[in-house]
Image 1: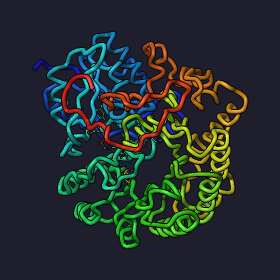
Image 2: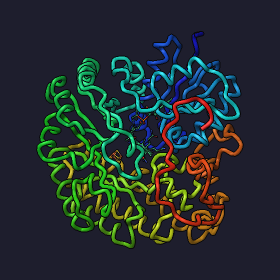
Image 3: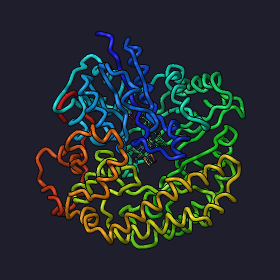
Image 4: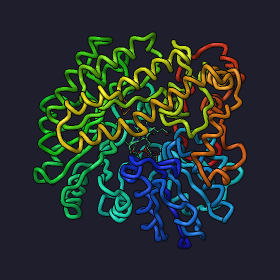
Length: 541
Ligand code: B12
Ligand code: SF4
């Protein structure tokens, strides 16, 4: 095989317009897989340039002009930026590959703009791309391993890429680590609800932690495990064997059901400083919170639990999904406000219900019911748009409650209460900073704008109600603004996508008529029999 000049681009943001918070934090959102790819490609004998795009780099000049192959890792919110870059580099003779959440969720669309689109990616799949390395146009080849990789390169092997990325983080530097893939829970909206839980090896983990201590004095580790601590004792034993007390700090996403008091004591001893559990809903997904209760009973129980967590872990972000089908009327929103009163130290992160293409089997049901709104990808980040029409709310009613809840959560009163209930300078600073930035006040302003447009701009209401697929000017102008100079490289047709592509490609013979624009489907479907498993061959899906 000839020696290839390979570029790897990790898009952690979608725009060159970077907030103050973004300047501090973006490099800390880097993904692990682009670094993994860097190791694998070098081991195959190729030259690699890896760039983590934090919004500040010049994408046209940072990568060598004469690349043979360009891998781009993108979330759906960065899809349009990825498409524009692919277009630009293909014109220069480069073969392009897309991987990451967007490629997993929207392969049908991504194949129009990339030569390869990768689902689950292991070394064999990467080897196939490196050997084949040729243009596949007009539709790219879709490759995916049958399951998640069983092993990944260790931190020592990834280190040069980690180090280069962390150099871009001016103050807080978070080292990305992972110890497991998949999840044993089955939250119906989640990409990992159908991916088996699989630890990556605790001995390797111990070695990684020991290695990290040779590189940084007091490292801060960000665990990318979808659900950290499922094999709790094994994890803690690995940490305790490798790390002397007080030498390392950790951040992890974990479910409340794993955060019992004895576990919290051990997490505290081992330096866990921030934890991000999903509460999701007051009516659904009780298994994650270890409760069968619903409504106010659940609020009280979860608030007590969160307050107990705060006695051991200084920072907690509680994640909620708004707009689930189980929600109806003012109650779910009012309950969240009561929760914030009862657990004032928690930083709330609200996600709008989003159907990310193939991410979850449940999305087929939304598509069959004609409930998916074709918002351009750039808005699909759980905040800038909710692309599932709510079951029990009109859009104005939903946005009224959303704006009200967001204002409540990031009011001066709530910020003060959060400060009072948080200990430690960094957690206090994070809470204030996040509330005042795009995540808090910025979001209040954004949601309030959408609410106003729902009254004043019939094109917005018509689009969200599914009466037209014509993108309102508010959204098209925002894409131009967000993409900046890269907008001119966006290929024709790449602003919009087919929101029902998953359904279309997973049904061999359509027995249910797909909804025409502006119309709902004839009947809702309940089965999952048409769910597609990842392909393991190259070629059209
Ligand atoms: C850890 C995590 C984070 C971390 C780290 C992010 C990061 N850069 O990796 C943090 C907290 C920063 C984060 C932030 C966000 N996240 Co997040 N996150 C996750 C989580 C829990 C695990 C992802 C993970 O690392 N898995 C381990 C890796 C090894 O497996 P994998 O992701 O399945 O990747 C496989 C393939 O896709 C492929 N692959 C992955 N990357 C690449 C790159 C290339 C080049 C190639 C070739 C292949 C490849 O190889 C892997 C092995 O098979 C997932 C949910 C989940 N349960 O998966 C959500 C998830 C990925 N996040 C999601 C979202 C929406 C966000 C945010 C937009 C939330 C927000 N509003 O802020 C931001 C966006 C940040 C960004 N960089 O743009 C969505 C993405 C949906 C989508 N289609 O875009 C997910 C799926 C959760 C969900 N809502 O269902 N997230
Ligand atoms: S616990 Fe978290 S990672 Fe696991 S299925 Fe539920 S939402 Fe997904």
